Image (cartoon, rainbow, N blue to C red; front, side, top):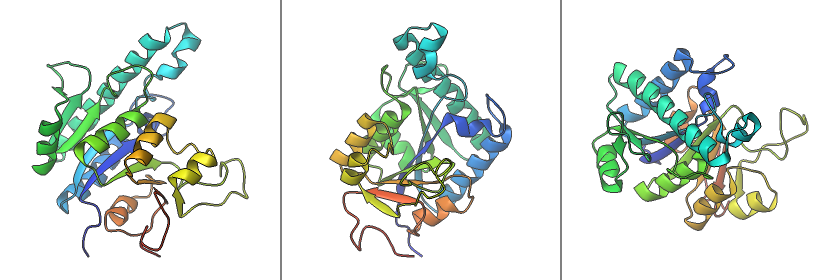
Length: 247
């Protein structure tokens, strides 16, 4: 079976690294993600990763603790670097070559972001972990994932969540909610489905970069997606017969 996607952007939330803890990093989750990503590398997929920092610090919530918004956002960016360092360490323990790249310069820890260098790392089979968000306050890691995915020529953004796609309503609150197999950018925006934050979503829509929202906790999902099997919800310019391979 041929690969459908050869260069992907995997977007993970910081909260998923907590596992069953209330905060911090669960080594079990680091190992789980490492094995998932290694499997993709072994079959020839080029993988870029953006991880949030919500397991350590959320910039948007900083105001509640008296921290000024811009300062809080920078603190959140540093949290993503910590998560990136943890994932890098675990992956290299499992023999996966990685490069940690930070939008905020910190030479002793990570490479600065240089587009051509990042692409070259991917071409050499290294996992590229983008940290530090966009390097600017007021932008989320969703925006960082959308920006970097477009810059490196990723074919798709895979947004791993704890639910198996996009629903008509919150499935954890509304038992009648139904899942979309495919939805257009326009529909998702009109229905205010909050696939990503508005800046990230607009960037994907403008550049026709598709998004798949899927359950990251199902260990076979990533492999299925890169081979074109229908998993989760596809957000695309259109949902015609060629939008995704039917089940």
